[in-house]
Image 1 (cartoon, rainbow, N blue to C red):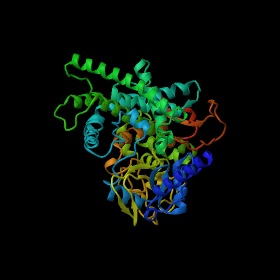
Image 2 (cartoon, rainbow, N blue to C red):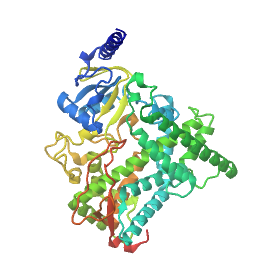
Image 3 (cartoon, helix red, strand yellow):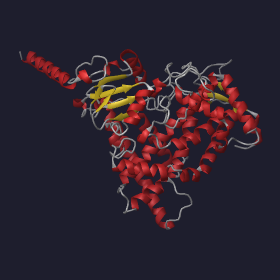
Image 4 (cartoon, helix red, strand yellow):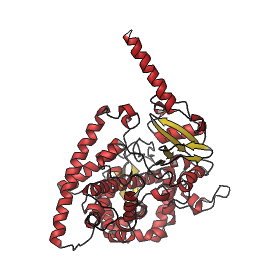
Length: 515
């Protein structure tokens, strides 16, 4: 009898929660029928942006989902992206937190901060100080040196006919550049601090990309599934100790130098803001630690993944690769390594970058959180609803792109005639809603300028200096014109499933200079 009462009580609880969480469903966008408690979680594939594409193909361009107890809407057209992210930019100006993000970033993450004074202050500092033109110009020698060292590593491998894990080397390049800009440390360095930064950044990125059921089902919030909480608490403890040591050492150096710097990195700029008592927002050491983590994790994986996708597409499309190589040989020649200043004169390389972002955006979905109720397309979107704009799906939609699954950089060099809009005039800075790799509006990526300096020249240098032959995971060169497997794997940046392993074959350009 007691057992039957428990079962009945639990059934009533499930029914009550189901009714309450679906109250007012008639005014919401359409979507699949949810289950009690878990909502639509059971319908999600590991590649969530693929699942959302499939849902929208069945129920329409704007759909409602309930992921556990979290209400969500998914938009999958440029028109809706404009309506949600431009017309209603302020309404969708916040972001959803997670247990791991809050803990690892001291509840002070700029990327996930609610729209308000702190977020506006850091956005201004990022735009005009941390990642402004002056800072980017100041660190040009760092980027140039790291690119040469990167090409040098590939050259050394090619001389002894060894294959290269391109995925790993691109991650090293990106992490070395951003860690020097932020902390004046090379992540590929041999000292303990450099090794610690490299290891922790990879662990944090992995944690951020994992699905945690406690973030979506309210009564599971205090449960530790698969040791997830234990893992991110351990990473936080080690990260805090490492950054505290780096900050303390930097403060000692600043006192000794009397405020004189050879080159100010972002940590120096943050400490300047920390010491400025007249600042509109009072920063703390925890803010600095959170910002360092924000910038390093955001800049490392995204740029490396985009460069890797671009090279993989070029290997699979040899005619495009040859056309890109001819452009570089004509504009730059083989007497020097391509430079950032060459990028404006390499329109085909720029078109390749755009085409890569169309098919493989670094972050496949733009995510926001509503701070107030709104009306979109006649539907009510409640306050605290999570918005997903599926830019991956938009980039592959035949209504907006001719031959959407083909890698055709030429689409950005000429008018497509019968398309809704000429793709030749599109940029990737948030003004064209068919192509939003860096987001748009007030919460667009502040690192876009750095990415658009680093990515084209890195790709161009790899094309200029080497032929590329696909190898198997063990580094054995595959005979013939082998293709790269383009399967995705789940993660924060939707990277390739398998590391890109290739054998670089040096071209004449490498004979003219020492990397």
